[in-house]
Image (cartoon, rainbow over all chains, first blue to last red; front, side, top):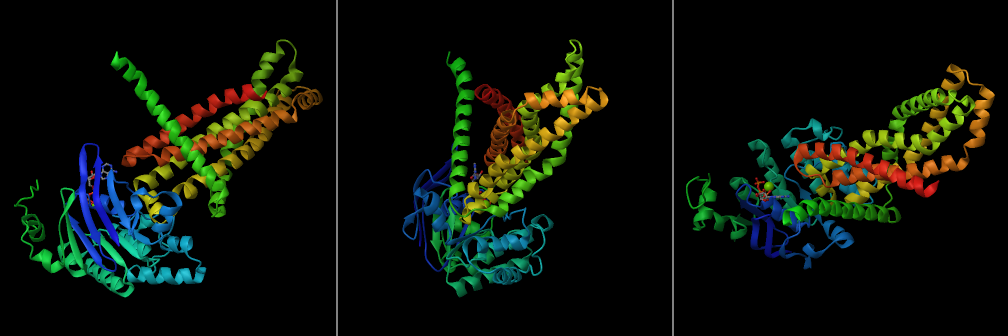
Length: 248
Length: 256
Ligand SMILES: Nc1ncnc2c1ncn2[C@@H]1O[C@H](COP(=O)(O)OP(=O)(O)OP(=O)(O)O)[C@@H](O)[C@H]1O
Ligand SMILES: [Mg+2]
């Protein structure tokens, strides 16, 4: 479904993605783990064409997003939903209007039906009744959940989640993980999730891929990753400061 | 030697690059005028923001511009007993020049800067990326309604400023300085032609385009967080004021 090959991206002298290869299967949840500042968000933005690689391909359903522009790119983006790391809610609109936005843009639903979907999506992320609030009135975690509701609104084929549970309390984080796992199962969509939270990752992932120094150094089922003997993966999974990765 | 050319070349290149980007932004915004979806709701919202909400500040500046013009012209013209020409001179200056320019500068400070700040904030908080990710073209959604609102509303504000300015000038001339009302109005209506007003409005449409386009451009290319938004806001006012005054000279030279 999504095929990244030989992807390179640098900002100035600093190479963030270094000949990266990754294939993401259709109908599965792939969790990408890696260090803070390691390029996970950059990687996600390449998948939806918000960033263009210096070289390499980003194939989505066989078409190279990196070389698309204008109407063709917009067309392929309609398949996507995306949760941004900082939620990126439109701050001139209410939470309800934010969630309704993709529905108004890309469907012919009536206002009644839109209101129903908005209510349902907000309820599923624990924000019932927040329709008329402005994003500036929400806490960080509430913004993230509103962003999640917006990403889910169209039930798209592919959803990219940039750290859906970071900044939530453990109970809410678990509830969101459950929601992600359940929705994925129900819709059979392709999910790409960035996460720091290993417990959550093991819970929702079909596949886990680890990004390290610009490359995917390991990929496998949660079981395979948990029992990996790659020293870097081991250190990350166990959350130790000592090991092959120099932390500070 | 290289350093000399570098010193000269770097700002020139930056200027050319900026000019290129603003041209591309403009053409892309214009191309969305002719392709659906037409976002009338956004257009009306921007017309209200750029136009309606500038009403009072433009009215007050317009009135006082006319009033001070009458006063100044009167002091000058009195020395050779041409007081009856005060009205005509004042009205000519307002319709041709001061109405459009002062209105544009006021709106650039009020609405142009706000446009840069709003779009700049959307840029640094990834809201523009979010639009793109949801398959909505940010130029079509953000830029086209704003520049169209500028081109429509600034001339309308100028019509109002002309009117209020002339009324203010007449009040000072006839009411306070006791110039003969008949002569004042007579000279004014014979000397000021419809063309003067009309050309002033063409200028103001161009100014409306400049101040909204520069605001959008500065906002669109904002980098560097809150500080960057502040910088974009200030620069939008400086750049659009300069562009308004410079283009005013050339438009005037071409038209009158
Ligand atoms: N627009 C940009 N311009 C310049 N550098 C950038 C830009 N975006 C990201 N970077 C750099 O790329 C690197 C990777 O950033 P990225 O946001 O992908 O990290 P991340 O893995 O998502 O980290 P975190 O887990 O903390 O969100 C960082 O060093 C960052 O400074
Ligand atoms: Mg990130």
